[in-house]
Image (cartoon, rainbow, N blue to C red; front, side):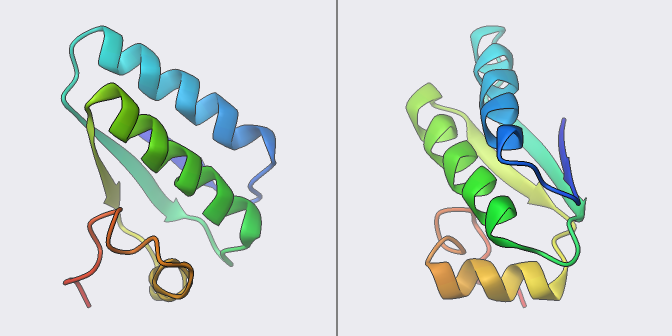
Length: 91
């Protein structure tokens, strides 16, 4: 499992992508990222999640977010990332 929490640094995206790539190389087909600690959500968190989503697609992993706050959900909807991250049908 991956974890993203505030404050989110610009380097967090690269770190998470490297961890996901390693998990995929060891055979993981689904990776969970705990985002419950991301509050308030800021642009750095959105950037990290966008990079993580692309890395998951490239490695063939399914990425699932655990416990996003309503504010993070709203920000991901606003940026168009809710659907790629599997949040489009969850309130």
